[in-house]
Image 1 (cartoon, each protein chain N blue to C red):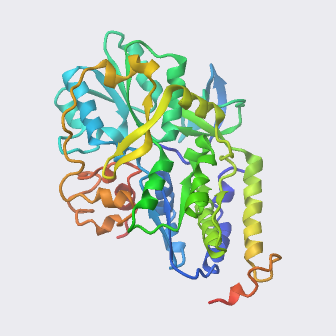
Image 2 (cartoon, rainbow over the protein chains, first blue to last red):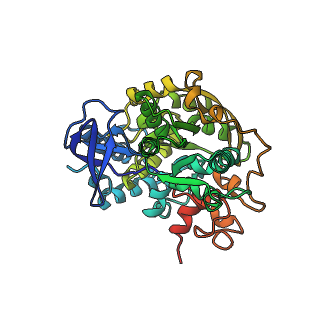
Image 3 (tube, one colour):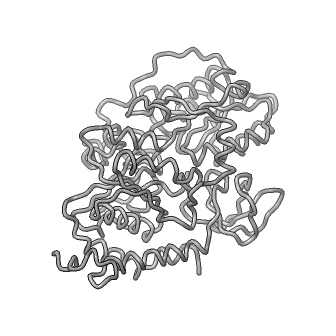
Length: 88
Length: 361
């Protein structure tokens, strides 16, 4: 029921978004979202857009993952885990 | 930058896996997810095989049509057969077996059962058939309930009513923590349910149960990062509610969606197939919507429902993560997606169905 992949809004028509999925255009209700624009990526569930993809936050997440790597490195700045790289 | 590609990048996947392997957990841990879409991602990308032997990921009750009670399915069948309504519901739902058959069997016996992709399709069916009664059998978690609520608030045709069977995720998680013999060390929480509901209602897990929870998306990097974050919390002796799906999940969730749900539905105790009655785990229409509540519009006397599961079915154990599908003697033999014996083999979100489609050999 849930499509994991975000879809790009191609057009907006009468409060609905037109998205393309596997080469077929589909109409998606935008009732649950505010300020959707053409070109936005939306998450679609059972015919409704339930969320919008925040591209800025996507970049933040990638930075956060880099931070996780840094913290975990035995040479990282946190100091908590010095030596953990040698545990096994 | 695309919105999918970076989270599928194989070099980044390798780095997260490397970080997971160098975590060197002091003990084995079991992490549960509660989302059929997560199980699909995990199986499709072979993520379990990438994990160190100390980390296991298990599937919980993340399939809404699997936990839909037999009583509701039988009511839907009887509405189509005895009341002559057009019964509209999602494709997964019509094939779910009960000891008294499925909605497809009701269709074969003359019931008018239609498959729809969206609640709006049911609305259109009602508009196109103004002299018929149309009932939408509304099954799903928070992600489905919010759309149905928004549609109802816009106004629906007089001949459309709703057989509501929505369920909420956090009460099921709380229940699982109380089941003594299932060990859970952390939860991956569903990315789209939290896109709608936000993270607030998940804070109880670290705060009251000391249980790490991390919201995750559905690409390999998303799921593996959530596992890494849970592993890190456990290793550091912490329990936090964290967000590994920031591009979709905001702290407060989707305000419009939550408002629509609160306007139309009220929370009530609800039965989960194979699991039992869980407090405050379901949604029912508020009193002012009695007019469109199929349970009230049509007088169907409640009979004792049939057995929850066919004899020998292990879905009740699989849904709570107690066993994996191959531990069920029927898996892949008596029970396949072509000849499903239990609900978990039918739905795309059902753990048995996912494991069967991605089985090796």
